[in-house]
Length: 190
Image (tube, rainbow, N blue to C red; front, side, top):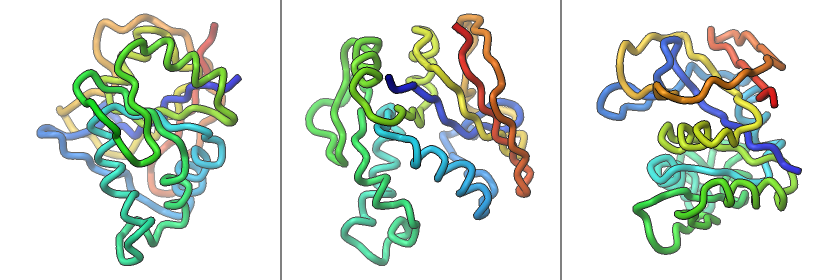
């Protein structure tokens, strides 16, 4: 059975974006690629996104398949990003999302249960915050893999909203990166 792994980058003070929706990527290096991106893509059998992140990622990665001058085409794992099946969780989007995606706009717990039962590899959720908070409220994630970037935003969009359930976790890994970021990996205690 596949695990559902929440995989997100956050500031030290817990924000995933600055005010106005500005995403600030973490400092990057070959080490970060190896322990963050490659880690996820070597294990992923399926990706899950909320609407906003799905279309941001689609706009970035999809051109790699047809435009060799695109930024994504120069990234070694672009073919994997484009090949992996994806689920777009949205209450507002209708139609075919493209990018090897399937729309889920109904029973979130049922959708995740079906993915866990059917997917070879793990199911990685790359956000956004609304989707992750819905998953947490239903206690669906099996693991949380967070990269804490060496920055304080002060405000913006928090990864975890107030009012979520109290869920005990066990740290399974902690990797200090040369960029100043730290990868924290937790397993949900059940």
